Image: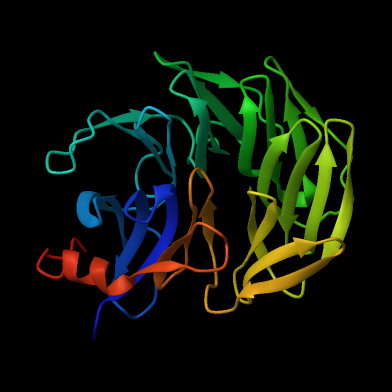
Length: 301
């Protein structure tokens, strides 16, 4: 049976200069702790395999310095892998074990990185903060799915049961939410403009409060602001744009699962990576390039 392959998450300024998570499995059915997770760097348009393992790598974040943080939430251990160099031909990693199944990672810079997930040493959700030297446990506002912010004193977390919570530099403040549905994406543009999305649609907010803008026709998993457009990842329906109180279809051929908007708009779908300067015309990098990269590498299961 042919092997299964899929892109999952992407971060970076373009599809010619980025990192992504991808999966490879036996083709019968993806199982998180039996499939391979891969970290791949694209440099000058060429793919380089940086890391692979059996066990679920759940998220990645690229800091402004170029360092890469990858969360691990499956297998026999949980924690964060941190890249020690930027040469894709000689990858170096350091694993930081933590007492939680890390389900995501995000940061402001190399002195403020957050990871979160269920604790393995107690029956509660946990969160740890990296200060550039060590990880420290901090209070967790709930079952967090996604985090985004502008600085170490203005960070928002969203998650299950409609969770929206703001970090002020020392503690979390849970704010009223107009849904009990899971919120899966958050983007903070300014103190007065931020967006969250989830199973029921898109919400708009500020430091003063939140309100529902529009219901979605299906599941939406991520949201970002690129130039003046609010773009929403419709996992089954394609790339969407928020216009007033409605969602309009931008590109139906891109069932987006992950987005970044540092320079170009960069998106991942299971079958493609794509980027755009204007949110209309997209360059594309097909999954076949990842398949070719890993073709002669023996499977690990």
